[in-house]
Length: 98
Image (cartoon, rainbow, N blue to C red; front, top):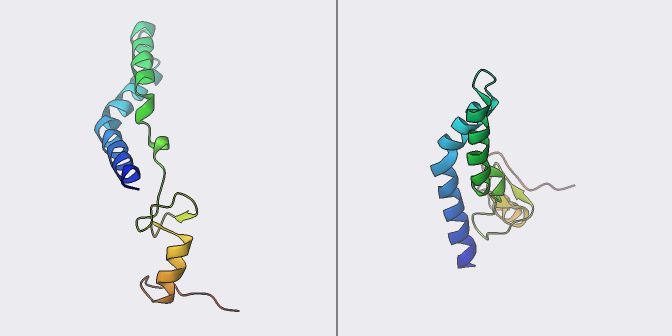
């Protein structure tokens, strides 16, 4: 369980670290006014940063670290959301009954 936490934390830190460089290289690569040699060099350097993409981050529940059925707004899985909503921990959310 601890390895999930550490791996997720490191991945998010790397993404924050390389985000500005990534955006700069993307803009450099798509600029048609620059010579092709610069654009190709930026493309190669961007390809090396493929593991630092935001799409590699998986949203997990902050309570159980469950990776499936996570509600982004509450950062919790459906199990914890139902449990905490029934206790009134989330403002404006209540357990549904029919």
